[in-house]
Image (cartoon, rainbow, N blue to C red; front, top):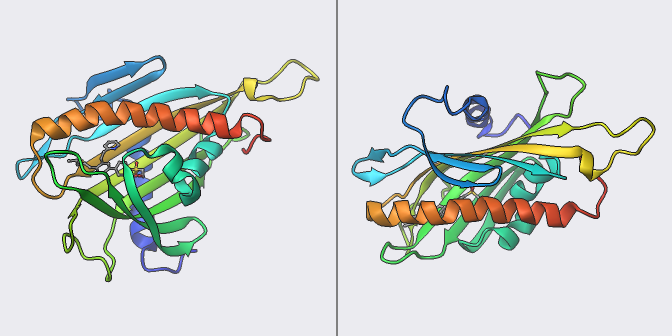
Length: 240
Ligand SMILES: CCCCCc1ccc(-c2ccc(S(=O)(=O)CCO)cc2)cc1/C=C\c1ccccn1
């Protein structure tokens, strides 16, 4: 749907986030440091502070066999799966269903001592993009989450400190064709996943605590989430 209030912002954010996600680490500007590696998964961060608060941009790249970008983005975007893979979640509500590809979420995350509990209010948009490199190849899929306002839930009016986040999940599927006459199976699939996020913690939190949380939580999150998608899809027909 292109006639709702958020459409211009969503168009702008999706274009900018997808362009950034497609850039390699080298092109993304200097200062990226590899802080976690596990098999095909590599996680980079840049140390940045805004008003003395840690807002370290994060960029993770991962290659997972046996699933498609559509399946990864579908399970990341759809609310019904979120409690299964998002371990830091305490509560999640869909405040608005703007269209079938655009939702507004309100999430509270478990409190991380000694910081106060955080909540996040953001629009989430899922989109298929044409594969510019290979016209007949599988499409690229992306989900962009970006903080927004909602009249009924102003920031910091309850127990939680409101975080401000921008997240982009970009997935490119590769099909390694089977032998002549053999059926396509999940063994012929591989998905390159790029996850970019900038989370401003909203209120003050000790830099050491934030950096420890990100160092611990992000690798866990991406491994757990991709394992979840493989598990959920392994015996189902391939969703391109
Ligand atoms: C003092 C602690 C401050 C940080 C608290 C926090 C804020 C935001 C978020 C967060 C992380 C990922 C998203 S998402 O990618 O859009 C998916 C939908 O949930 C949205 C929100 C998390 C966490 C807390 C922990 C934490 C940090 C990384 C990774 C995982 N958990």
